[in-house]
Length: 178
Image 1 (spheres, rainbow, N blue to C red):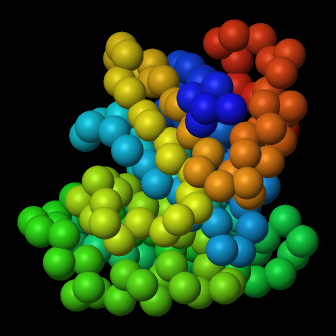
Image 2 (image 1 turned 135 degrees about the horizontal axis):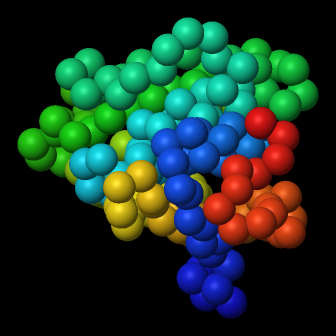
Image 3 (image 1 turned 45 degrees about the vertical axis):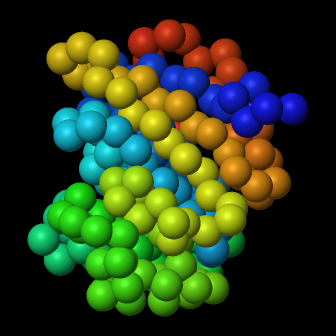
């Protein structure tokens, strides 16, 4: 089965709806998960990350760590265990080798971490074997397309869980539960 066939394709009509979907994803996240967010400036990557943080119970404001490359947020997974949300923004990297300059591997190797990476194409050679790729596309003013493409069995299962949650949700409405 191709990964495109397993992909989940969604439309968000507002930044809050993007955050709401992210919160669903955050509630299903497990330690060790890696989410790669790919899309142009203004496509909703940070709004989606804010939602993931919300779903993980992160307190405080989450913003993109464009200048620091990484931010750490204490969080809680669905089973109540303590985890750390690592939010990486690779936009400012100018060469793939720069990924080694700020502890990138340590973030990915933390067994109690959940990693969200904006601009993953800046470090393509350093990506893990399994991950969820989320492509974000600007369609109109506040309207965005999100395509979740699983890479690895954990993420195929996650897409199916998400698909089951959003089936029956009317077009143009935020998913229930947030």
